[in-house]
Every structure is written in structure tokens, then in C-alpha cells.
Amino acid sequence: MKLIPLGQSNLSVTSVCLGTMTWGTQNTEQEAHQQMDYALSRGINFIDAAEMYPIPPGPETYGNTERIIGSWLAKNPQRRSDIILATKIAGNGLPWIRNGADISSDAIIQSVDASLKRLQTDYIDLYQLHWPNRTSPHFGKHWLGMVQFSKVDGQQHTEQMLDILYGIEHCIKAGKIRHFGLSDDTTWGINTYLKLSTQHNLPRPVSIQNEFSLIHPKDWPYLLESCVHEDIAFLPWSPLGGGVLSGKYLNGARPAGSRWTATQRNGLFRDTPAVNNAVKAYLEVAESHNLNPAQMALAWCAQVDGVTSTIIGATKMEQLESNINAFEISLSDAVLNDINSVLKQYPMPF
Image (spheres, rainbow, N blue to C red):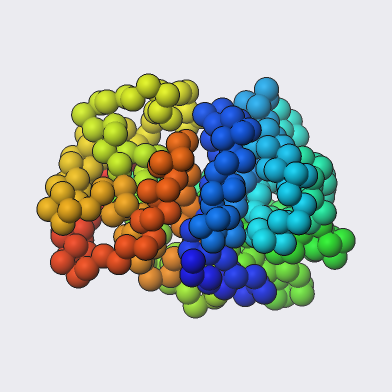
């Protein structure tokens, strides 16, 4: 399994990152442990979690994914050094997590300690801000006018970001986290954190994870250009578009037990006629080149210039095996040309 530097950190991660958001809802603790065992047996060293997981989030399940990882680590303490363990502090808006308050220095310190306890470990390799305090153009809010940037108090948010960096610095100096990263943020967010870290001699972000897939390539080229030249690892999440690029939700299908049959916090914003048409076109490309459509979508994501490690998830072991196998596929120029033809036709289908 290929190892890639995680931005300017001293860590190297595999090109595949094991996502965990179904652990505790769609997957039992035993199934989650089997996934961890299998992923490590395939050479994967990167695991991504969050305090709010599993998904869909709720007060009754809050923190359970981290607890499941923690029980595996408790059974396998000798394997801790084999894993680059990432988790995230939830942003504002969830009343059962710090009363829905903004991320702050104090919240960082409090949440790191709580995650360490659930994870049953002494340190977190990569601690990420799940979403920024300001509204960002993610989760379907990327259409013109949905976010009023001119009405955001940039100075206030810059001051909040500086406060957050002091909380990160405190945890790094205490040995509780090694590096920090962003999630669901923008080029302005990245560059503001970089500016503040330089001005105040504080930790700099080493990574950002954003939604990125064949039906949601909006971070190319502008954010990815910034990541490449600032040495920020880009970590795509939902590279299968919430599963739709596998074709299983085509024409309104809802397989029993699938994610789209459960209540979604942000709704099924990817369920649009344009997405359905785009998926049909991608399925035709995959079929014409004798490729599995999900594997094609994952292989495409991995081959995008600037992508560091792609976050995958699966509810079944056969899905996990197939998804990991996708990263051994090199898409030919002919396949990429056909994919680009569909991308040009459906550049922003939801």
C-alpha cells in the first residue's frame, strides 16, 4: 500500500483511509473490529473518526464510534503505533454537544480529553475541526446565493480561529494530539489559518477533508491548487457520493438497510434528477470499459492531482474488499476521457 506524506506533518498515510461513520448504527462493534483487522491486513494505516459519529448523529449514539475504536485498541494495544488515528471535534449546531456552541479553545481542550477517553489512547495523530463556525458552502449549500459571504464578519471569525489555534497548541504541547486539520472548509479558511499560524507561531493545519467525487468535484481546481502549493493534504470524503455512484440508488431504488433509507441530518440533497442522469452516464462508461462503477469512481478520485488519501466506508466486508481493490486500478486515458465527457455534461448535478 502506497504511503504519502500527510502535508507538512512527519506522518505518512496510505492512499486509502478507513472511514468509520457507520460503526454503531449500520455496523456492530464486532463488524467494525473485523473491518479494522481487515484494513490493517491490507496495509491501510489511516483511520478516520469523529466525536459525533455514528451517522445519522443523535444524543443516544454520540461518541459510540470512538468507543468502538477504543475497545479494539484496548484489545490490541501493540497495534496502536501501526495506526494513524484521526478524529474530529463537532462544529456548532448540535444541542447535545456542548449545547450547540461554536468551536473554541476551551471546547478543543475539553473535546480532546473526551475523545482520548473514548478511544482509550494517549494521543490522537490528526485532530480535525469537523466544520467551521461560519456557514460554509458544503452539504449542498454550494449554489450561488445560498451563503452570503458579504454578511459574514470575517474579523470576528478570524479572532475565533486564532483562539482555536491556541487550544490546538495547548493539546499539542501536552502530547495529546500530534497534528491538526480542517474539514468542510474553504480556501479562505485554509489561508486564514496559515496566516495566523505564521503570525503567531502557532500550529499550522496539515490537512483538509472535504466532500469530493465525480458528482461533486467543486474543490477542483481552486482549493486543490492551494493545497498543493501550501502542502496541505487533501482528503476526499464521500468519494461515492453517499453511495449513489455505485448505482444502487438509480431510478429511486432504496435497498433495504442502505444509508438512503435512514433519516439524514441534511436530507437527501444528492437525490436529484441530474444526479440520476449523471450516474446512468457513469455506469455506461464503466460498462463500456468492463469496470465496476464504484471502483471506477474511487480510482478516479485517487488519480486526481493533489489528492492525498481517499476516505472510504463500507457496511459489508465484501464492499470493503472491493473498495480497497479499487486503489490498485489505474484508469487508462480512454477511461479518463470518457469520464471527463460526463463531467463536462454534469459538472454540478446537486
